[in-house]
Length: 70
Image (cartoon, rainbow, N blue to C red; front, side):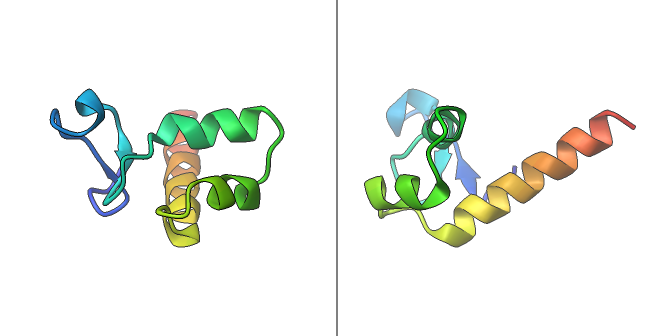
């Protein structure tokens, strides 16, 4: 994932992948979506994450998945 969208730093959440500029783990978004929650629900709960970050993350994840299966 792009450094602008996701970051890892041992001093932030123990090195867990988080949305850059936040302490919000990417896994939290995936957990929300898996539970049937919407992106809007996630953004309401984590206002430090922007919609642009979420969409960019999902687009990159989609592209990587498609590339890995071809």
